[in-house]
Structure formats: structure tokens, C-alpha cells
Image 1 (cartoon, rainbow, N blue to C red):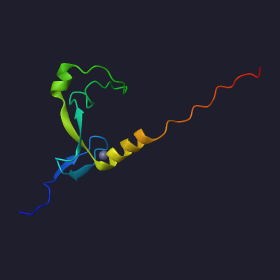
Image 2 (image 1 turned 180 degrees about the vertical axis):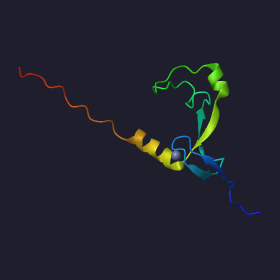
Image 3 (image 1 turned 45 degrees about the vertical axis):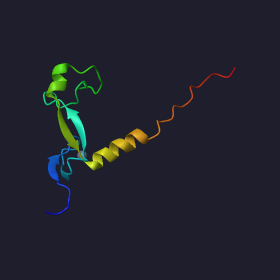
Image 4 (image 1 turned 60 degrees about the vertical axis):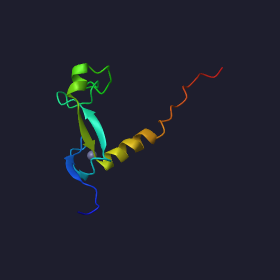
Length: 90
Ligand SMILES: [Zn+2]
């Protein structure tokens, strides 16, 4: 026996690439297998109250570190500046 953490091979929910991960540290995402989307998310990407059936069906899918990093960068990015509305001179 060595001290290396047990790794699992799985497919990333976001980019569908296979990657090796440690099940105890990998980022997991709830996915409803009936829709392929997180419970409560509509195909248009908006959120609504998830149905109990959807929550019961949901399985945890791993997300690879690259996609986690991309999602973090997206969340940390400053919002696009909103240009001031042009006003006629008074
Ligand atoms: Zn990925």
C-alpha cells in the first residue's frame, strides 16, 4: 500500500473530458439525469424551484479543475461597465 489518495476516472459534467480525480476533494455538481441539467434549471438557463422528483433523481457529477477554474474566473470578473445614458444638455 502506498499513501497516494485513491483516484477515480470520470467524465467532467461541463466539458465531457475524462479526468482523474480524488473523490474526496473533487467538485461535484447535482444533475437531474432526466434533463441533464441541475435540478431547477430550465433549458433556457433560468432557475426555478426544483421539483421533489427532480431532487430525488439528481446524481452528483464531477467537474474537472479546469472548468472549476473557468467558473471562478467568470464569477470574479468585474461586471461590464454600463456606459452612462446620454443626456441632452440643459
Ligand atoms: Zn471540465
